[in-house]
Image 1 (cartoon, rainbow, N blue to C red):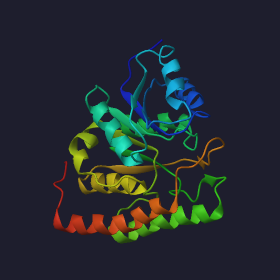
Image 2: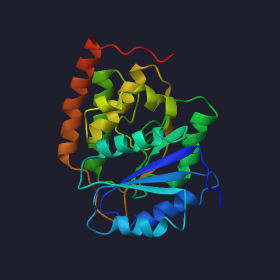
Image 3: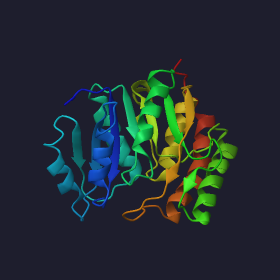
Image 4: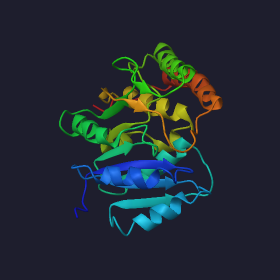
Length: 248
């Protein structure tokens, strides 16, 4: 069994016992070798127990950081990013546990960065139309127009600013001051993309099909979008005051 990899997939979890084993096995079944880091926020449904049972099956490939209680999506990924940077990974991924992001698309994001010089590869729902399956129309419209709003306010040339299926080159996460990332919900996704773009990194959208979860409960609510709507104004204002020095 191959235990070395240049790629780490970070998966935050809270009450994902219906999905976690299947998503782990799906990633490890890919021809390209990936490692997985679970950021587990004290799920009362036993998600962590399942991961612990699987770790001996996938030694040196499956890792977990356990935290006390729900601390927010943004802090979960920041925790994962910091851990990844202490290791030797060159490509660090964000991915959901619920199969809304197809693990089979991981190699496509990887190739964009590893073979084509992209710094941030985004699995985009909207770059080639609206590629969303089984979402209520109201939620599709809210998500789509939220991304349009982000483009209008910030000038960020990305169609899916709230996307959470992403590959970062190591240099991007080393350049961004992760301690300074302030948002915890979906505004975190916008802030990371906007900051990478400000530094001059090559940010590219790769079309994917987003499929709503079949098992478990969505963690999204209206307050998350409220944070994002107000957050982008603050991001734009701060960017006018504090100019980022270009990476290249």
